[in-house]
Image 1: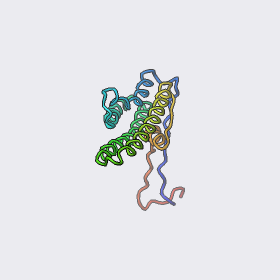
Image 2 (image 1 turned 180 degrees about the horizontal axis):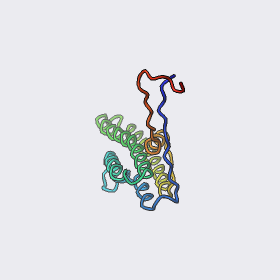
Image 3 (image 1 turned 60 degrees about the vertical axis):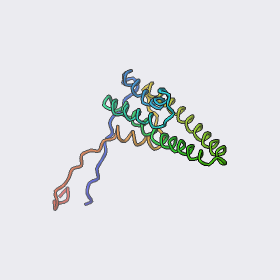
Image 4 (image 1 turned 90 degrees about the horizontal axis):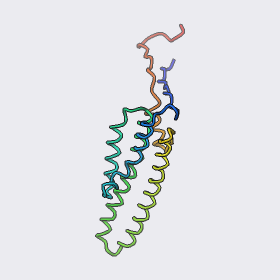
Length: 168
């Protein structure tokens, strides 16, 4: 008989009417950490990421609802920050090649603008969902956040070695 597989148990997902206003506000706030670097007037991409990390660790103990949104916002923020940092580095490299500077800066500016506009729009939509006690699942990271906050592995029953098969 093959060994028993580890089963999973799903934790109940909270319904909007069972979530307090403070939890809804905390979940909503997770998506606004992207504005942290803008609020202090610095266009450096990693200040918002650092704010998102701090926000996650401060608010993760409130409830699975808040932890889900804080984790999803953090996971959403990581690739955006890396891409923005790469574009900032690309800008400084382009400064050393004056003949290509115009083309490189135009492509970099368009890429940065489109990426950040999409990021801001998705973050505002997700914040509105969180404010109303709802869930929104971003591709890939939404599933990861859901599994880490609402799916728990059940304890596997281990059989001692050389035990007889069950049912005999």
